[in-house]
Length: 539
Image (cartoon, rainbow, N blue to C red; front, side):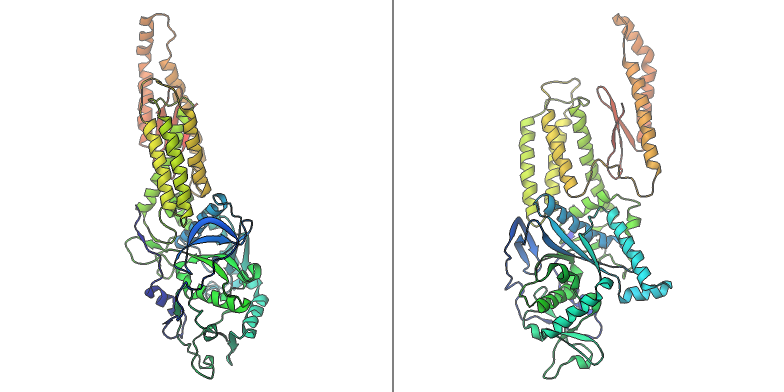
């Protein structure tokens, strides 16, 4: 099992997050108790309990409408390639989105903000001697391609900062007009945290210290205020969703100060008590053996494109599902191989179960009553796990336990068919297992070819022809058309070298990662130790 860490926002993380804002003093605890005063929204109860960062507990997930649940997802600042740490967060929330849609019947309206103008973009553009706009456009498209390669569903709409500058300015002017922000002689605009009373810090319970710009300290006493940056104003959320947002998601490192400031600014603009109802935060992807997240600043990252040269997106999804989305997760070749072998096991079972249903796999009597009961229990356990803060580790364990029980029945081999066959129960189990994985974006039927490897399709066709030819040779060697017993025995003896050659070929191909299985009337083959299993008929 994977080693996980709690996803709580600790003092060190908060200090580090706020420390990136230059010129600001030490933080202090907010006076308001975190989570107190949270208003449970009215609307459609999804049947899910979700861990809400606003309350630090599991709350019933109630959205404004089952037909249009609003969700804002923090998007990238497009100045470089996305890495696997980014991928982990986006894939985890994509899995949750699919579960809400396909298991609990919620239609999600998702907005993702793209920061396409920023100090980092301007600096990187100068280094590359290109315009900031062209650099941002290049890496935005690169990000979208990476997400598609990871099978992450696109949002309903993307909103770019550069396309909304006039609206952002109006948003800031509205906050000023409402008495929650003010300009300085240097041309900056500061948010007045004191005007919020004890409501600032409702997300993480920390308030920043005073800023370094003297003019930001208003007469009448010291105020702790926050600089309003055009690229950090949450205009896109307010533009589409107004004064109420159902779900807000992002990495745990963005909770403070980024998300905390979003809450303060939106509630000040809309003059509402509660703008966002549920804040979901994903844990970091850690490099195994180090107490550090994967990030560009630490130069310990793997780009998504480089990762997909070795492992498939389906394997990465299963890797993400083996821990809570809120927990930090250790990345290593070993943990990826564990996920790959689990996927191999599920695909192998589906192939064997299908072979049994077609009469190609001989086994002993099947306890179909036991399997029907196990299937019923698994369905209930998976639904309960997913309703409990999207507990994908428990759901995966339940499905793999069902696969284990099915395999035990299929592995009870017999030389000849005996007892009644039970194709219906195996058909139902196969259907459910495939449906479960498809729900979260994993396809057991995909070949999982590595990006850019165009030779794999040709290889599969060649192996198909080879296995079919071997099958015809084997069937000829086993066929006995002679009339007498002695003649039949002589035919088998004469053709024994053909059978030995077929067995030798089967053994030799194992060394090349190809396993041939001879059924009663056909042969199948599979790739060993690959990203997922290929199971192909030989006739």
